[in-house]
Length: 103
Image (cartoon, rainbow, N blue to C red; front, side):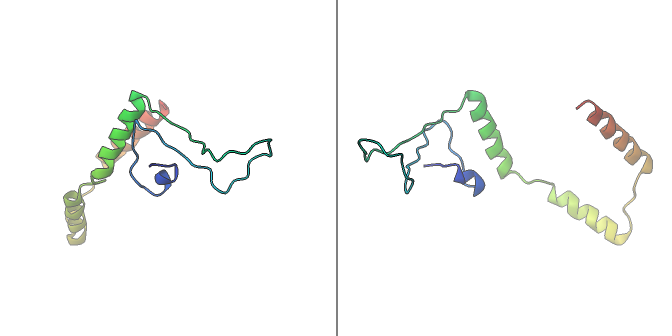
């Protein structure tokens, strides 16, 4: 079964099921009668939460960048043929600043 620790250890999450947690080694307040029953919690995700989980799993399987493009740029830099278009770079920086102002 999936627990909160699975998130920290990058183990896959399951959606739409119950998650149970057994109290072990924790002391309970003194009462007239003690029982051996285990406590369990359950969690259910909304359809939006399940969608987010599916998107997360899809993104986790994709590469973060285009390896071929990175290698081509590295080679161009190494052989001196990489050209930086200063006007295009400046325009993109201004566009990014404008986009960030809307946040």
